[in-house]
Length: 335
Image 1 (cartoon, rainbow, N blue to C red):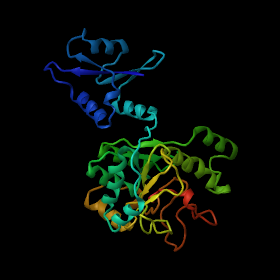
Image 2: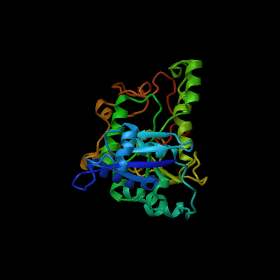
Image 3: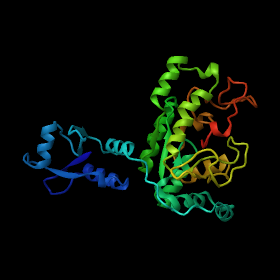
Image 4: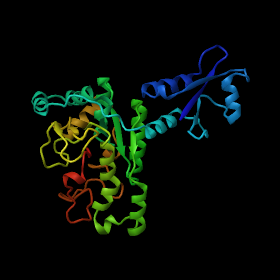
């Protein structure tokens, strides 16, 4: 694949502001080295190389990108963000690198009582972009804020089951804009979803239970994406929905990573929901709008609802006799 970027040079000799912003964004995401050629469309000069390419493809605005595949076919992208998403989705999994294994016993001992940001620092200093924050659209936003303040490289992904609340999709965009960071959206296998819907209908979970649907839409995509990383970060906290006391760092008991062993960090394990929301308030971190509408958990639209005023009445999978989720079926979600 060969990528040509066409930038506009103003009559003053300066690059247009949008072109400069696009370049800065690509550099920030370590994608600038994927640009093979830069052509300038000089203002008022129709014979400049970039202007000729713009005329050839009928493009009137800069910047834009011409992506040529191996067959020579060209595709024009007028959005730098769309190019970044395409490059991220087509990128090969991170190459496995040899890094010293984290000494779990030492890490747990050293991090006992530590602030979440220090627990988070362990993963980012050790693995960088090979450490991913799993963002469900709720508490994990404070982890993105903490990681951004640390100034260390990291990755973020979010599972899109195809059945999320509209507010969640809007919130993901808000967080992207706030932190200027790409959130990799991980989708379920389309063929598996199609087969389930065609054979059992759209809402089969109301009759058969949620496990099959969750397996296809959440668990398998999560297993697939975690296989590319060496460490991941969850937003689980004390009193969330895990009856088991969480260690701040552990060898993941369920999933495997790129190097087989997968480190799992739970920086918020010592915090309550009140602590999380207090951090968000103090640091002006954007919070999910459904939290203000009484939601304690934010997942798929058909399966989560506001907290009931009736004690003990579940707010997720309430139509089932036993709506509790075993560890493997409910991995990493902060809500």
